[in-house]
Length: 92
Image (cartoon, rainbow, N blue to C red; front, side, top):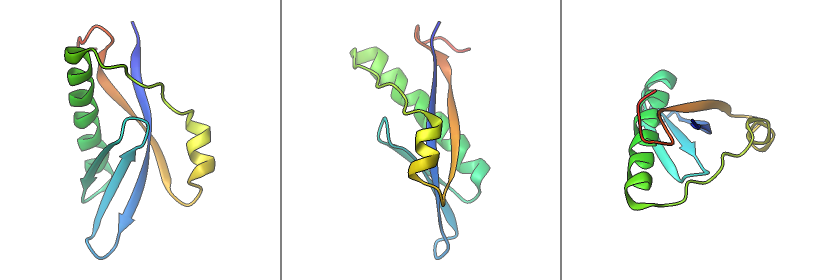
């Protein structure tokens, strides 16, 4: 059983008072007023992305190593977003 975990980079926009979170490997972006909200929305979007990929037989890209993302974005918070689905499209 394969788990899907992707690094995500958080960006804070003071003018809008919100965070944008980016999972660049799968081109999924989400927003939230707090870090926790942005991460939670990103997890939901990750699950939806995977459901579509499973349904349509789309190849799912490998995640960039967490350490690589930290090196690329040293001024940003980088977190791991874990799907609630496995590679059989079942909740885990």
